[in-house]
Image 1 (tube, rainbow over the protein chains, first blue to last red):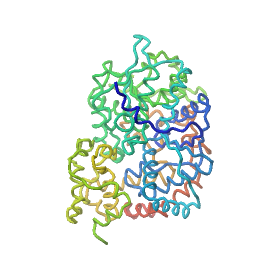
Image 2: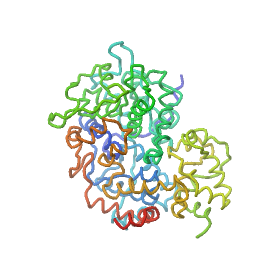
Image 3: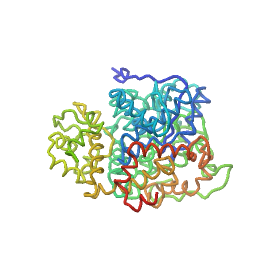
Image 4: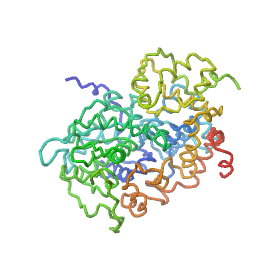
Amino acid sequence: MKRYWNEYQKEIADDHFFYERSCIRQTFFAGSETTFLRILREELDKDICDNPHQHTCTGIGYHSDVVPFETTMTVVARLFSLMTECGYKNFVPSCVTSFGVFTEMMAKWEENPALKEQARQYLWEACKREFEVPENIVHSSDIIFKFREELKPKMRYQLVNRFTGRPLRVVEHIGCHYAKIFPHHGVGKAEFPYVLAGMIESWGGEVVDYPERRHCCGFGFRQYLVQENRGYSIANTKKKFESMEPYEPDFILTNCPGCAMFLDKWQYTIAEMEHKTYDQAGYGIPVLTYEELTGLLLGYDPWEMGMQLHQVQVDRLLDKIGVAYKPEEKYLGVGGKLLPTPLKPEILKQ
Amino acid sequence: MGKLIDMIRQDVRFGDSLKACMNCGVCTAICPAAEFYDYDPRRICDTVQRGDEDEIERLLTSDTIWYCGQCLSCKTRCPRGNVAGELIQVLRSVAQKMGYYRSSEKGRQQEQLMKGIGQNILEIGYCVHPDRVDPAYHPEQGPVWEWYHDHIADVAPRLGANYHGDGAGALRNIAQEDLDEVRRIFEVTGGMELRNYVLPTEEKDNE
């Protein structure tokens, strides 16, 4: 069988990365960013800079049309100047929206050098700063993809159902701005993205192909951010769930933090609105970030990674994989502080 | 003020967004917004390509340009390399500069977005932050989010986050010197000017 994605590889640097944090991942999956840095530093022995002077790329504001192009371009230039100042050349955004914004600005500068010069002038006027364009820009999931085989021998678990001995069936969902805007920046390009499928296959799982695999998660920026518009968002997510449901996936894996949040939270909302869940037992389909999955297989504590913050509970998936975990520690605070537990939804089983 | 079509063409994104549309409709076929709204990116490309001022003004004052969700799936599939979603960004920019966004219900939502996301960026340096995802406004987030929102000071450190701390780490406070540079970028590049188009006078006075 011809593997088309093999023709669409991209360059992913080996070491010395500058990490650009994500507003959405920090908000909803702060433990995933911690886990990513831990994997790079402790498992792969890589150098990655977490610069305290970074800030939002403004991407959500840019795609919601409250930040002009020139402003976002210059904010990007400032973030590149932090990278330059620290002596790094390999830029790694955690957010897929940010990845799209950075690659958009780099593409615009390449085709229009006068625009890059304008960015330099704006940045100098505003901040008295200078910048270099990264030599290598990849999404953080690309790095885990690149080193997936190197990580495999360190893993305590595989993507195998310990009760049946069969590979776990995984839906992978790639954020739209990872490869749809600039396909050559994505592993496998836009039509055959392989960044998450490669992890799943290497670690023993089975990738589920389904009709709406490439459909947007439904975020839609202003279509979610404005409460009155959220019908757009949930309707598009629902379309994906209905399409994947017959394949009975064990979980969904994402590289975009927004997608991970929507695919998780809308299952709760659909259950409340329509009494509908997308697994036969009524618990919903767990949604994992690629950092959580990697950490889980490496034996990291799921609660230290923040997996208790998912609305669709992950416990039954942990049982399937055979992960050793302590249910009684799930909702503890730092230092073992006892906290009340979350309320239980009426429909979605917990 | 020049013609609307000239304003549209002056945007640096215009050249990439609309080269020569042959009206095949692939963008509409792939578009999530077209499945949900009465929305047809093919017709938008056609309207702009024809350059009729009256038609463009009708478009800019309508709800239509605010339906796109910016997934940019259209870019991947257009056989001519057009990007309907990027053209939408250009049209929205002109609609705000001209005040046309106030003529439509969806357009007027820009004020809400500017008060939310726009304010977050300038005040705290994040587009989104857990402190500002209020469960009352986000019932779809569910009871686990409400729990995290209520107990974040106890839970975030367990996740390795630096919630409201100084220095590096997830959810740290962004230093005032860095926020000042971001604000200065907004002043120099037109970000504050756009805020002034969109925010009501009393909101601007409070800054």
